[in-house]
View 1 (tube, one colour):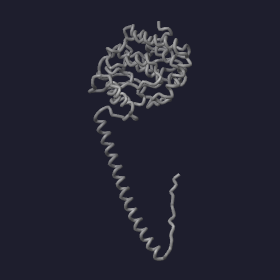
View 2 (cartoon, one colour; view 1 turned 180 degrees about the vertical axis):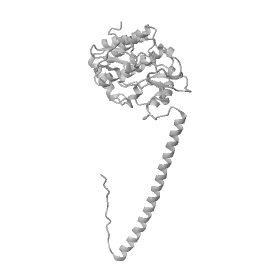
View 3 (cartoon, one colour; view 1 turned 30 degrees about the vertical axis):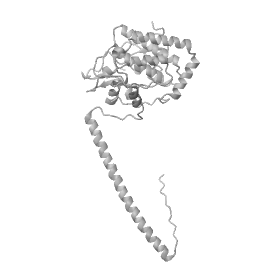
View 4 (cartoon, helix red, strand yellow; view 1 turned 90 degrees about the vertical axis):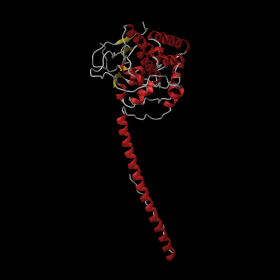
Length: 334
């Protein structure tokens, strides 16, 4: 059993705390250790099923990374047609109702690779609801941040392909990241790596500080969606259109809630319109009264040849509970 101490943290918190210091060398190193650990799990013919940055643990005492919280079990009362996990990390085919596979773990690896590159959880500004689920199934993926090495980016995109059969297996991923790490060490000095990271922080489409909608979004839970289409890859235009939207409109998970929300909004709009009309009528009446009063004052002024100055008055209102094995991520991968 892995014993965690107060100073030990998960990958999500590690990236958050070190976002301005971590270099691309270290990012690639973390990704490599992560896929080596998953390779050890897959070699045992096991599927994790619930990979996300909250269960990738860093032990500061010996600077080791571990994969924890193996997803072999879920809530006992989980509905048969539901899924369990952290929505942005769940493969689209699993969201649509298919079984978890080695390839669905690989999709989760892609999301972790993106999180390592950006320092933020995927889709961190979106509620984990039907709206996000349908976008994931329709091929929407997190926007790749500027400064991401080309080979790293291409491998990440292969791993999050909507077609599980087109994703590389974990052995291939281990080898590819090993090659990226090797070439990165040979060709790019640490100073340039830090400079690239600084460029990422300044120019990426994400904020320099993580903007988390809610902490509750970053834990695994039961999801149940119906009438979802078959997973597909999105076009570049669709990706751009999605990421150009400034806000996440909170779409309810079912039609009844949507209708209820719509009726409430309509009622509020009617109340606002009514209030506006009343204010407009009162304003028109006030303007008419002021106009008539002004005419009378002008006539009185002419009659008595007297000049009046109006006074201006201002109103100043001041993880699962069961004990489970953890897989340590070795330094050399073997």
